[in-house]
Structure formats: C-alpha cells, structure tokens
Image (cartoon, rainbow, N blue to C red):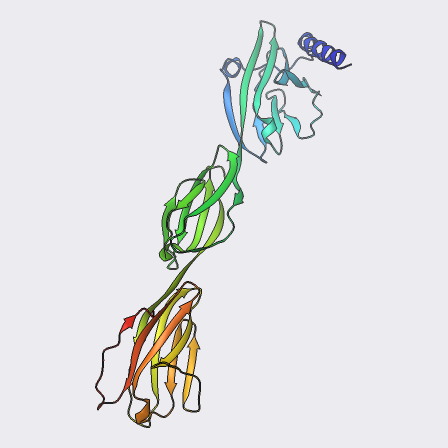
Length: 322
C-alpha cells in the first residue's frame, strides 16, 4: 500500500508540469524578476511572509511549488494549509503569503512560469528566525565561601543565541562575569555573592533574561566597635557591628561572665548590630566588655570599654576567640 501511494504521488507531481500548459492565461512574469538567482527572505517565527512573484501582460501560466510539492496551480489551491493564500493585484502580481510562519516553513519556494517562448522560474529560500528563549537555568545557590560554583543557562533560537552573564551589584552597576552557557566561579568570595543575570540574545527580538541568586556564607567579621565615656548616673552604650552570612548571633561578656538583661542592663539586637545599654551607670560598671559574634561557620570577638574621665582608657582590641 505504501509503495502504491508513493507511485501515485510521483505521477501526480509529474502531471503538474503537464498541467501548466493547460492553466488559464493571464499571469505572465516580468522577465527581469524571473531571471534572478535564488533570493533569501528572512522572517521571524509567527510573522507573515510574502514571497513576491510579479507578472506582466505576456501570456503565461503560473504555479507555486515548495520542495517540488504543488502549493498553487494558477488560482487553484493544492495545499491544505489554511495559513497559505495568494496575493494578487489584477494580473500584475502572483505572490505567496504564509501567515504565522513556523520553522517547518523554511525552505525553497519556486514560482514557475510557462510563457510562449520558454518556461521561467524564480527561486526564493525562506529563512525562519526564532527569538532567543532560555529553557533551563540554575536554581538559586547557597554555598560557603571558597567553594567552586557552576551556573548554567541553556537557550534555544535561530540563529543560535549568544549567552552572557553578569553580576548585578547592590549599587545597580553590573559587573561582567562571563560569555558562556556555563559560568564557573573558582573559590567564590563574599563580594561575588548577589544576583546573576543570564541574557540570551540573537538580534531577532528582545533578549530573554533570567536570574540566579547566589548566597555566599562566611564567618563573622567584626567591622565596628564603639566604647563609651559615660559619667556615673548617665546612660551608657557599647556597640558592636559584625558582618556574617548567615546573620550572626551576639553575646556580651564581662570577664568570664555572660551578660544578661537586668533592671539596669539591656542587650539590644538590631540585625548585624548589638548594643549593650546601661540605664544608670555606676562605678562598678566601668571596665572591659567583650562582644562575641558567632554563626555556624565561625566566631570572632572584640573588646570594648565603658569608662569615665578618671578611668584609664585602654584601646579596643579585636581578636579571634579561641
């Protein structure tokens, strides 16, 4: 049965060329257009393509073919595709229109002409472009500082899209990161954390963009400490700031004793800052206090001082807690 169908189809195509000689007249082609070599028409997926074929007042018969398949013979439509029709202006144009073009429409199209002198053909190659589209991108990443990280961004399109990576800083200024589908970061540092933008572009349409958030964990680093010179009877405050991911936890010590909230002492936690507040400083409160910042990756401490004008002021010292 399959062999029989192929045989019938070949006979049908062969008969088409004989059919040209029997088609109605009135669609001669302008010889200057029909003598061209193969032209290319580039169209974006989803748009409408019009493949031009012009005629004059010479007697001829015309047809459209695609890869030797008959689309139109004269005004008779052989194709079953509802997207395909003719564009005619009187007897001066015999153009093929394809709506909502897709990639399978790409290929060679032939406008075939039968004149009194000799047959003529115009060949057009339809190129279908597809906008870049990212179909797979890395999930958000959480890693420890010093680890190796690979981010992936896979995209499709015609022509093949170009992939670019960049790190968007909190300041809003992008920092170049890479030009490949896979972005390798060896020994990632805390300043490389942030939002990474993957952009796929092939100049067919607006680039497709996706984002990956990268969180870099690192142990606490105490950035700022503030001692306090406070007279007896006044409010005194000792401050300690630390950077860390995850967010650090704080403790206050005096000598070996851990400080807790009392009627005269209040420990405040404000994000990555802790403040030790003395509501009514007494002589016994003066001295050296230790701020300790910890998370699951490490620990660091710093000494701060509550003193009066008469108390010898020792310089604050930042050092790791062993």
